[in-house]
Length: 215
Ligand code: DC
Image (cartoon, rainbow, N blue to C red; front, side, top):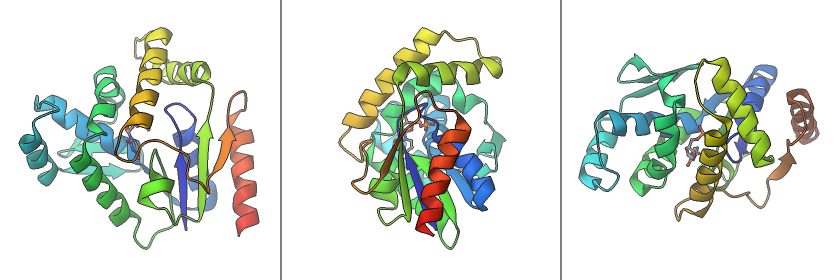
């Protein structure tokens, strides 16, 4: 069983995917975190986005691990760091690099082998698993998405303004949906769910209904 959950930043993908994973006994994979981990590596090593040789070298030696809610880079827990502004501001650039996508897609397929999985991202239903059993495309008004992110980051003690989050979300939406390789877009057979004004429970129930009707 593969469930693909795609959509723009802040549309509720990870919250919903985690809940569904628990409810349905699936393994959850946050594919955005993988791009964030590699972005953090690039920033730590001071690698330029145009230095293909160095990028390939880093990809070859990449050491990332995901265990439940913890994200590791070179065996160090960087779960907090990958959510910070410098990573958020650079991750769409990293995610537009062909070699990076190739590596991440192959890791995602490898991870999902012989498992029942729910993956969230931008290209899960279109590229990673075009044969997924259920494809959901979550959308929401950008202001509301920014407010959700703002609350999340504030709760974690991050000091960042709502406006700068809003700007970052608009910028990432644009970069992620206009890049050449695997842009963010709804798969033809995905079901679009607009989460604007809906609480988590409502969205979860919509998707559970789809799941039950499918089964
Ligand atoms: O889901 P997120 O906001 O943590 O994702 C971070 C970035 O990674 C996002 O701006 C685009 C990129 N991404 C991607 O290109 N493909 C995916 N499957 C997941 C994320």
